[in-house]
Every structure is written in C-alpha cells, then in structure tokens.
Length: 363
Image 1: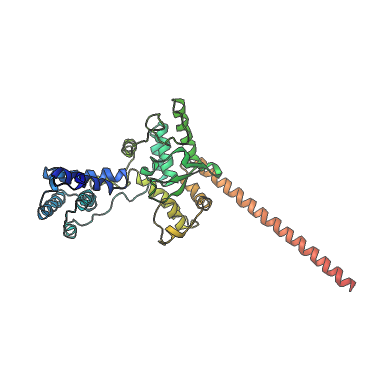
Image 2 (image 1 turned 30 degrees about the vertical axis):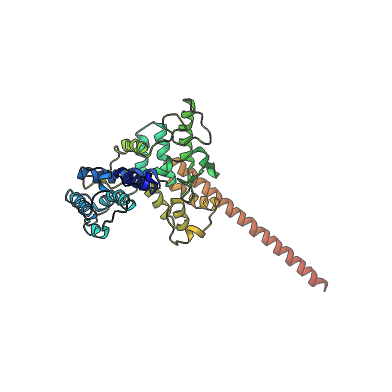
C-alpha cells in the first residue's frame, strides 16, 4: 500500500500517473492528453509532480492564467478545450478540485468552423496523380471508398477484409474490445490498388498472412504504422492540392477527414439510401439512439445500401461506367423477368378461360 498511498511526494506522483494512465482509453487520446498537460506545465515552468503539492486555489489561478494566455495569442475555443482536456483529467484523477465552470466562462467565442468541405472526385484524382507510391495510392483509395477515419485504418489486419460481390470487400472496423464493431466496404477500385501494394510487399520479402497489418511500416507486415506516420505521408501529398487557406492556419478541406466527409456526402445525397444504415457504416451514433443497441443489421443489408452509392464513390470514370452498365443490365433483366411473369399469367388466364368455357359447354 505504501507504493500508492505513502506520504512522500514521489508516491503521490506515482499514484496520480497510474490513475491518469488507466483513465485513458486509446493511444491517440494518450498522445493528445499528454501534449495538453505538457503545454500547461511548460507555460508555468513546473513538473507534473509539483502540481500535487500546490494549494487548490493556486492551481485555479494557474489554469485561469493559462487560458488567458492562449486567448491573448488568438488560440481558438476548440483548440483551448483540447489542450485543457489532458490537464483536467490529470487533476481530476489526482483529486485536485478546479472550478471548471468558471474556466469555461473565460473561453473565447467559437469561431467559424473551418475544414467543413469534402474532397471532390477531382481532388482525389489529383492526389493519386501526384505519386506512384503504391502504399500511398492504396491508402487514398481505402479512405475514399470506405469512410473510415485514418486512425481506424492503421489498426486493420488482413483478416478484417472479406470478399463481397462486384469485386468489393467488406471491412470489419474494430479498434478496441470496448467499442462496437461495425462493417463498411471498399470498392473494386480500392481492392485493385490494395492488391498492388500487398504484391509489392510480398516481392520485397514480407510474408503476409491473416494477422499482418493491412498497412505496415516498410515491408514488415507485423509492424503497425503509427497514426502520426500515416498523417505525415498524407500531409506531404495534400500540400499539392489547391486548398483554400482559412485564418492562415487551417484549410477549407481537412487533410484526412475530407475523405470521410466525401463518403458521408455521397451516401446522404442519395435518397435511395437508408440514412440509419449510412450512419452505421460511418460509425456514427444513429438518429434513433436505441438503434445503436437494438437495430441488428446484417453485413449483406449494409452492402446493399453501399452498392447504391458505389458509382459515385468510384474515382476512375471507367469503374463508374462499368457500374452503370451493370445496373442497366440488371434493370433489363428485371423487366424481362416481369414480362415473362406477365406472359405466364396471360397463358394461365387463357387456360382457365378455356377450361371454364369447356365446363359451360358440357353443362
């Protein structure tokens, strides 16, 4: 017990660090929270263990001054909130009481949101045109055709993909056991780009199996790409896009999230698609809250909705034209099937009429 509850400054710090670490659910959140906490400590030129021996009223003033400083530097409300999240968790886990309601009153007004636009098909074509790197091209295609977050893609393994009709594949998205699994899909166009990338890895000695990561560091399938590394690769290519700068810091189209916005826009703009099922593929909480727990949707039903959006999700026009031809052929087959049914009904009616007339003639 002395390890956690001793009277020394070190034991207090050890316990606070343990609780802080245990309260964080994902590695991405851990990085973000540590960044925010370290920003506060650097501003006041102290260490995290020093905070634990300060009076609560003094810490309150320090947090307030930290917020005032960021406001004076023009830092936006959402950024300040993200910086404070890690600090708040550390203080809460250390039982340090801060009047956060008072802190929120000091927040600046919310600025006009940036990064609300989606990538267009032309944007994605331009991104693909800027490189011959098979890994990058596969990543762009997967993001564009699935609606996944880039942080979700890095967790995918070969086993998470399964064949579907029309050359597509289903993708089982599951970052951790604490979150619900969901299915989304990638197009045949994305499958082709992914196969080319995996073939390149094999040629370079990567012994790929079902446990290999879909996107790996160099040619070692067992070594997972970091989210930071994937974002850096994307950032290098996205610089070549003609994005509109907003307030000198951000852009009208977010570097990675604009893929997800494109997917969402395409699905939601199609009136034939069930919006609840579109939300399910996106991994959003659905419009009707209980549907998260009680709506049981099969992978096949989700894929049927995905197919409705597939022509618009394709980047290369030839895939879109092929999809439209297949759709037209299906419509023709359905009409022919209906015509056959009508002809069969007409024959049955003629037979019934002849049978009826035969009975009447004998009566």
